[in-house]
Length: 144
Image (cartoon, rainbow, N blue to C red; front, side):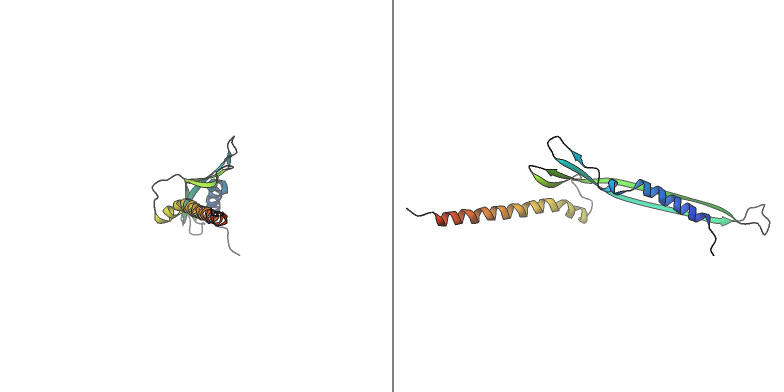
């Protein structure tokens, strides 16, 4: 049977504090609905870290059979960085509005390019469909 060590309490307390700071509402924020029916959802990047440690030591005044003393500490940090807004409009559809114009790394740049690429591809297929329909209509029109 293992004995309960104070470092376990320290780690548990640190993790509970982190858990209370970071939840799903921190990453994908609460939707905001405007009077015209548009819904805006903030999206953020959340990074966190923690560390803890401790040591058992003998008190200066302790006898040889005295239990060891424990000294320890812990800490945590959280960074919340807004990255974009998901905009859902009844008239314009859904699109992503990026916040950071100058992306930090390649992955960020790719994520920021996705909405534009999807829009361009959709536009291409829509134009292609119109051209095909116009050609079909022209083929049906009798020549004079």
